[in-house]
Image 1 (cartoon, one colour):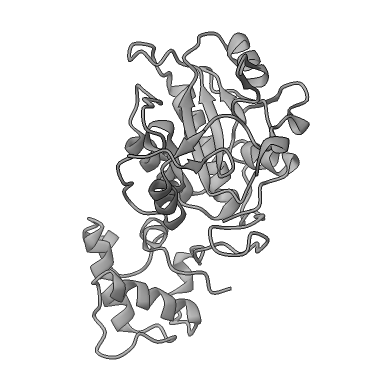
Image 2: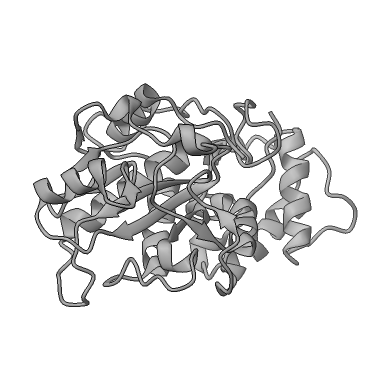
Length: 308
């Protein structure tokens, strides 16, 4: 669980990820907080607007309509890839959804349960992006728009230390919904995972970790990520002694990739390297890519608990 990002931090996170941002009207104070909770937040939800045209879609998502006041999301993703921010706080985008799905998102499960009931307030728990598309299966999804969905989702995940499993489609949350229609959420999560594993490549990208307002674990004000950031490939070669090594080894054992006779323990040994090679093979790596020296992609997939 996590404390919502301030408006400044949301804009900064998006721009660091290379997202083109337009701040629409008074979006920074535009919300439905007087109607219910906003936070703790647990993920990002993707929708399609069932409209055409950027200006009309942005106006609709900012103002809402009779019976459903705006904002109807936090950002509108146009076909050219621009993200128009329309709300900051609780927004009418997710409605009631399945509590089992929420628990799976919090755990960052690799697969989601089937949606079978609408019993949990999603407006309190998810950032929402509406993507301009008719949702008829024929309206195209330009590459620039798909890339913006990837970047915007990754920006929020990176700010919290979340993984791609924290991003869901409306249809994966609420019974009776079909959005987003026209691309695969499984494929989008793979794109987001690749981006998070590879680091930022935006115009103003910079090294180092982002600050975070919170993470999936208990204590919304705790700024520590849930999982240990990749320490870098060179970190392992001098045979470090660290709690990170122990935590890594315990995860390898849990994944059925143990080559340990004893342990694991804090000292990096050949048993750690052989165990890690088993993990790389399990992920499908071969040859030099499965030599037992951790890389960013395999490390991210392992989800080593944060050690400080």
